Length: 523
Image 1 (cartoon, rainbow, N blue to C red):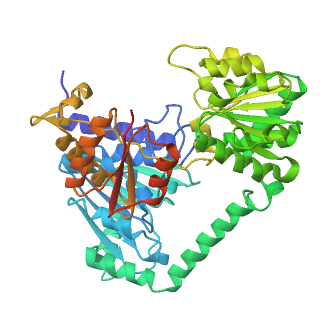
Image 2: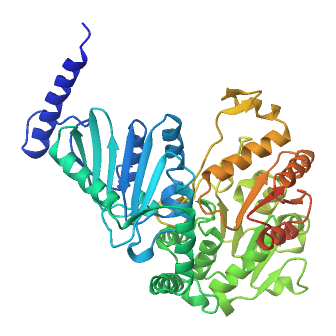
């Protein structure tokens, strides 16, 4: 038997009443999560955050109303996709923010103007209320608490918010909505326009007390980072972060056990080179050799070791220093070193570091590992598992000194959180498709147009943007870059065979227009 709409409503009310009783009075019957009020916070342990709740509520509401004191680019960035999908199904929204402390990001406010279905007003006063309303025909949701529309508040800050459900006749929902409507209609609340944003930018740029406070906060944050350890002129003052401290302790244990080899598995960007230098500092080996496969990596490693070890070692690069073997801390390219192994005593070095150890399946690396007899071999890699099935772990006696995953690094704030957007529903001959194998059927011109549209759609801060495009072939990159130029994007083009030092120079020193894209040609 199918229930009528009236019967469904009655059943929902009963379930709602049971949930309220369980939540506020107590009941042997557990509350229904669909109806029960609950605390909403960012909790890594349970893998929940305020952002996921807001996205879920946006997915099926008929309209929404937000009241937040602060709006930042990161807060809008994480909601771009949800807001776009909301517009596609015809839903609408209102956002009320304020000039409190003049904290709001002009770029974030500008991004909100790109959503025609969202009305935005600015309360020109000290509005600090945070509330999120998700309206539906029957059961609506509203969240009242501490979270502003910033990425940290939605994902990782210690925030407390209370989520309530309410039918349309509920007094609490009605009173909260009435307060929102009062603030929305207040004479201090003005429509957000591009002209208002331009005036706001001028105000922040004219040395107002608020903008001065922002500068002071940034300087204080920079000072805090310096005090955390990495200073160029105080080598012994470099302090390992929390995860590096744990890794150093694990490496110390390996040294005490006289393990001849160990593997350090650490995500890209987590400071593997610094960590190896810090371990050298604590182990105090007589002679050290650092091996890499690229000159750029080798040069950067020399500087990192100097900063950590200072004058306690002498430094030299193989093939560049005539007195290389007299140096107590040497750096060598794997290709050059593997061809002249007989020039060295197998026991010449006490501690050998092999960067990018996932490459050790190659003959040149294996020759080095088989020839030298140091007290300790340290292999470092972010990706120890090879696609060809070669067992890198075996070369290091299956000893993993420590492992730092990407998620570990993000949780410890070692890396900047990133936003990943996958391209979906490519239009080929005016038909939507999810078959990415057909992506190659797109002409280069269509591909550039599609990518640039997505860049505009998902980007919040658009000033001085830079991009990197990876192509599978040189000829593809050449055609793609020519269409990029016609689309108003001026790319820098360089082939995969060009020297890496030139690539680095181009990437670090060049930018053109409001959106610069670099097409890297990979041969």
